[in-house]
Length: 336
Ligand code: IPM
Ligand code: MN
Image 1 (spheres, helix red, strand yellow):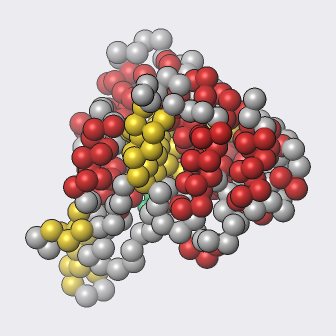
Image 2 (image 1 turned 45 degrees about the vertical axis):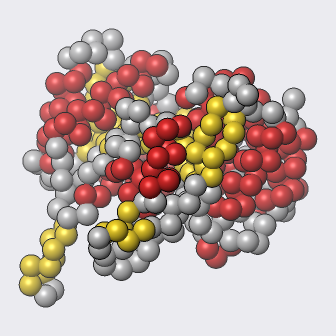
């Protein structure tokens, strides 16, 4: 029927409401996508938690998925399905753009940053031990192959978005071996990209400068190890109005999963309070990835216009009065 099939992982908590918002807007905009919803409730197989096979098969088949937030279980032995998904499909580069919305005022104007986060290792390797009670060790694993592929991705991305400047954000002054390897790998990769400049900055300094004047980073593509990227993406979100606004793409060689940067917000789930913008903008990234730019532009324009149109049309996290439903309806009304 001429439609693309995309795997949909609705997610936990507010995931249901914000996924519904996406589905409603896509139907109204007549986007040629058929959603294939899958369940990702962890399964216990031979004492290990894994994803349901149907979900894995669906993502491998469709190659593209949109994902709502999944709650991270607390306690030892529980793995985050968010991380399991990234690992299962080898989604090694996490692209996180952050752009001011004209018409929604924050202390910062014209923010336009993008960071690319290594997405498979570092402190997220999950290697931890208690040596003796009261003494634990968490391993930060950095490998050359994983560093190389994410840095290469960043260079390619920089060319593609016409920001031919890479900024490696690190702390090699202290993490001499691990971040040192990341930094040195960047220097090697850069030799294949004579048209792209390469610079380095210590992460604490980048945080300071971002909160002082984020426009200093408008023309660079930042790339960094996993945990730094996690922290810096929340910092960047804060500059433009919070986690309700920032999208992301988890990119691999064959599969990509697009998701909001925020969590499942159980405290407001089911209350018609959630802001679907981050998931919607993630879906816009997805549409561009699928070369469906016409629909991406149409939906993005309607979202931005709705947010800019005043507090009566915005959700509570954006100092507004609209519920998820009213906000969604307004976006639909603004589709051209
Ligand atoms: C993110 C989230 C995840 C992470 C959590 C939910 C595991 O904070 O995507 O930034 O830490 O990567
Ligand atoms: Mn995070």
